[in-house]
Image (cartoon, rainbow, N blue to C red; front, top):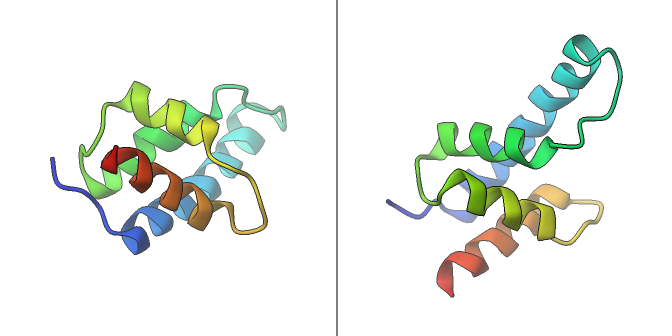
Length: 84
């Protein structure tokens, strides 16, 4: 498993956010997806490779701090978890 760069992971999470928004609007009829982290994890792993187990990445994404630039913060958080 190769570790993604900050930029690669941030881009994958940003793209996952766009795809997930469409999923919530079209498939879920505008309802919030409470299992969003699994969607993001699967999407990101499909983009940058299997650097973590989907269930672990999903947990890390749920635990990532929020903020205006969530993708950047979440990517940094995930990469710090990989270093542990």
